[in-house]
Image (cartoon, rainbow, N blue to C red):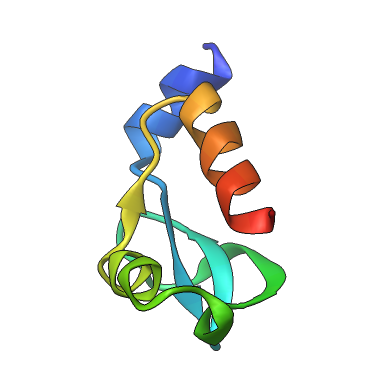
Length: 71
């Protein structure tokens, strides 16, 4: 199975955990990865989107989102 397919099946999201940018599973129960980026420093619209969870539908989208939030 290709990695992109696995992402679609697992329903992975970018969101917030402990105030940090995080990669979450479909239930948002625990982070798969916590990144060292304080979400409170992002614009309010980005914070709101992350509170709701931004679904990742492909590897390329995941890379694009990380580039956006890491820059």
